[in-house]
Length: 321
Image (tube, rainbow, N blue to C red; front, side):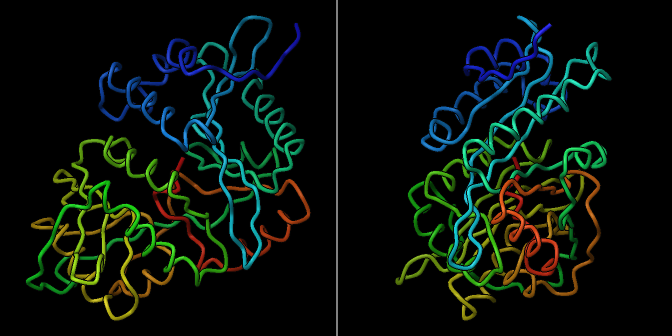
């Protein structure tokens, strides 16, 4: 029977896929909330323009599904078109027949026809599965530090709100400009990432926290993450400050976000934030392993940079899809 890759509507994806993936990715949310959260993301400006869901059909039977995200990668003064794949799922009764591999192969062919330069994903299964399709592993590391190693200062901490996002994005973009490469952060994507943070889908059993320090001149620093009392850890997802002169404020804000929790951890942040952390313990992540494959000559050049500049190019947790 003929196999075909088709785009799924939000309604069809919610009906045919989400009830089966809730046990994997709902992160403790009810099915109703899980479906509502995915729908809310799809209705955002970023979601409407750059996010879609796909399925591989054998006749009228859905055999495998995935999410597709469009991003742009900045490398020097060049911008590359990138496509990310997430939530790759095959029903248990259909596994072992190669449907997911065929779906991704068809999706990669489609991305090449669209003029994409790079495809990427974050693997929660054996990376060797994706290596068969040409994906290679890139830096995927975690860190942990003791909260007591950060400075305690009397600072006026405020919640980071939606109204503060433009200022937060300006700080974030300034910090990213020194990197060898980075995912470009549009206003639409920044709002998307903030909504995902508030949905608390990345850290099951945790409380999302977004804090900022403001002064007369504007936003000095912000921190986004989640407090997990069960792990005695504040998980850092993203942060930025207004240059080196506000680095101490950022560390104090990170300490304030941790509160009475003993540890601060999460994905190892890229430079320049990484060098601010006092003696972090770093290890390779076993899940959400960052992988990519080139779809064009420009993509090949980016992949060479990404594979050889590991100290500067871990992605942010908020780039996870």
